[in-house]
Image (cartoon, one colour):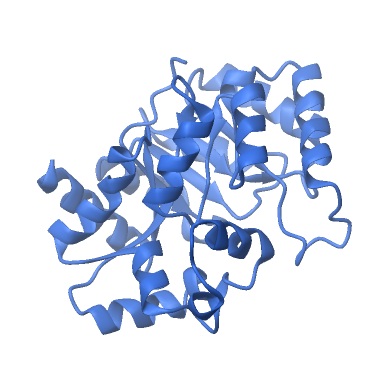
Amino acid sequence: MDIDLGLLGAHLREHEVNPDRAVEVERAGYGTLWLDASPPADLTLAEELLDATTRLTVGTSVVNVWTADADTVATSYHRIEARHPGRFLLGVGIGHREVHAEYASPYDTLVSYLDRLAGAGVPSDRIVVAALGPRMLRLAGARTAGAIPGMVTSEHTRRARSILGPGKLLLPGHFALVEPDVDRARAVARSAPPGAALGVHNYASNLRRLGFTEDDLSGAGSDRLIDALVAHGDQATTATRLLAHRAAGADHVGVYPLGDDPIATLVEVAEAVQAAR
């Protein structure tokens, strides 16, 4: 694969990013900007972010198979690739049963979606799958360039690499906040996606596979769980926790920024990682 993702990726939702902010992310040293939370099938924002930047790769984390028509996504992919060759990666995922009333047969549904993308000429090495469990990871390895799992630990990365094998992309996402006050950092995490997402079946099941207990998953999460899901501390500690994914076999580490100003957090995290390296 000839796409350059860089060491770090920045995960941002549609309301958190615009072309000017994409320039800030690129300037901070991120190789990829990931559009989170089911971007629409026309992928207009992804194209606008690529137009505004010069080297940044843009990816989706992830296009949702229930809300984004595969044929429309394929058309969008070809439009973007023609305008910005080698700078776009299509992440796809099955979503969550708590959100989609039609949620059923997730594995077969995703296989069918990948078949439609392939039939529309989207290259398999420009697709990654939001895979958590072993079966989805094997599918990602067999049918696409690799996996982009979210809300995971470095132990999950180690296991995922053993399933994917060498030569496949493994692009885990990890929450981060440069905050030396541990109580404050945990409070921020519990009020944000890490704590709020523990009731989502796919995430909770994956965390149980990793050895976390019902006590860990109750409420907004135990200290042990929050500390495993969120890189926090001073700059050196935050960087070390993020880079643990690299040591476990990741090709690239996506950063989910916590705090009131996601761009400021991303800049602080990038500075921490650069200093650590």
